[in-house]
Image (spheres, rainbow, N blue to C red):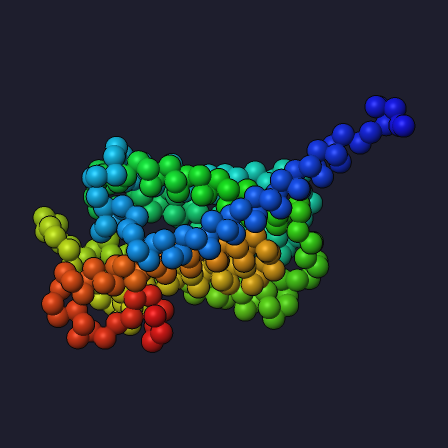
Length: 269
C-alpha cells in the first residue's frame, strides 16, 4: 500500500467529480425527455401564460437577472480556472459566443424591458436558476476539462465555420425578434398585439426559433456532448411552449389563422 502522502489527491478528486458529472449529465437528459411532453399539456406560468395562482411573484427584470446569471458566471469560471484551452482560438471564439449570449440575456435584456415591474412567478425563477446552474456547470466543465480537446486549428474547419455562422444567424434572429416584441405597443397602449416583421412572417415564436438555431450552431462548432444536451433541452423547453403560444394567438385573435403561420419552425411546426 502506498503511503498517504504518495496519493495524488487532486487526481482522485477530479476522477470522483467526473463520475458525478456523468451521472448529472444522464439525469439532465432524462429530465429534458420528460419536460417536452409535460409542457405540451401544461403551461409554465410566465409571459403571456402567467398565472398568479402559482404563488409568490417577483419583478420580471430582477427575476430574469437572477435566473440567467448563473450560466454566465459558471461558464466564465471554468474557462478561466487554470485551463490552457482558453488560449486557443477555437475556445476563445466558443467562449465569446456563449458569454455574448448570456451577457445579453442576463444583463442587457432585462434593462430593455418596457414593463420591468411586471410580476413573474417566483417558482419559475427558482426553477430556471437551478436549470442554469446545472447547464452552466455541464457545458463549462465539459468543454474546458472533461470532454476531448479540440485540435488547435479546429476553428478553421468547415464544421466550425458552419456552426459559428449558424450561431450568428440564430443570435441575430433572437435579437431582432426581441426588438419587435418589445415595441409592439406605443407609449400608453395596453393589451396584446400580433407581432409582424422578421421571421414572425412565418412563425408565432420567432425568438424561440432563433434560440434553437443559435445553440444548434454552437453545439456543432464545439462538438460538445454537453452542447448537444443544451440543444435538446432548448427544443424540449421552447418548442412545446411555442405550440401553446401559437394556440393562444389563435384563440385571442379571430383573424390569426389567416396569417398562415407555424408555431416555431418555418413551414414545419
